[in-house]
Image 1: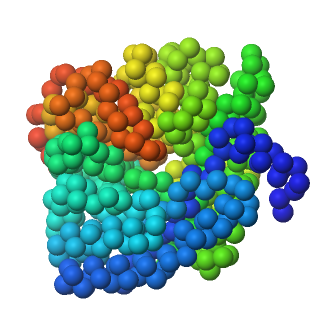
Image 2: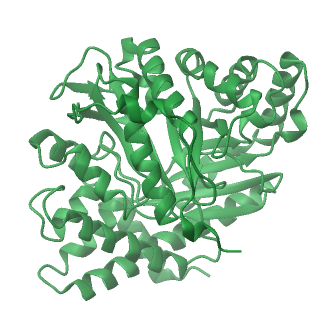
Length: 448
């Protein structure tokens, strides 16, 4: 039961602190749509999505109006397409994009492959199609899982993804490589993530499920303004209490959406997802703790505290916490990160260190357009290794901006924001990436 005091606090968070529900994401299982004929499979996919998701946007808008809580995005995630595509996956991609437009959602995720241990022929066909698909669709998002703690890293897939990212950037060069903003490379990908571009409906998920992603960096920052100069014990407790309140609202929206749509409630993702709007920044939470700028010494420790406290507070508010849950640090989508990168306090290497303690990884980072495929693969390998060894989800979403060099600006628009192009280490790793094969799983993966 949500009490009156909580309602008043929620209204204050919405009106004064940029609080919102970032997304209601409907996961849909498409395994029963598979067919050897690509066009028949594509039609089955389109028909099923339009049947299951027909009331998603309308329900989200009704909840927004009735509860007075902003619900920024309504989205769909589907079974990884490589699992259902028995032939050319491109007709399925076009069907998914048409369905997303017809349903009125802003993104649909699941043009994905799970390749942590190797590749099927279906995986290879999907990978080959990614650059063309992301250049010719508007709302479709793609992801590839190249490693896990249990299996190690598939370095053949890592090598190929570096090439694919460059190809995708080139095919969307008129939009500063925008296609790469819809492409994520994972290690330890999760099956119930509601956030794009990495959302898909995993094989362990039910026929369909409602997953909700909450947000509220501005709420956390405002709470910390009340404890200036206090010890970190009090900082952590303040963040925990705030995360509890945020998650309670997410739980309410998820249950209401579930009941009205007649679709099971899956999870609430606790992630603090920023936007380019001022007052909605994870980086500004870190500076509120006493840092001059995100990236200064102490940044990784501050982010570790934030991530842990958000999770501890959130799990007390919902029995079904999942997804990624923590704090995102996407450079182009966070005004504080944008400013820190612009002033030089935030380097690619510092961002990599920060990913050891936060959700996901190197996210929405613009890099010079002449960065080599091998260097991009090396960045992916480093980030995937962090996830593999630390038993956590990590990811890479980098955008080689065609024709741009370090210090230039790129503009993606909307929630995808804008960012300065960040310098990449100039030393080569070509011979390392060319080895291929698999980097073995760490010893602590043997837990049976």
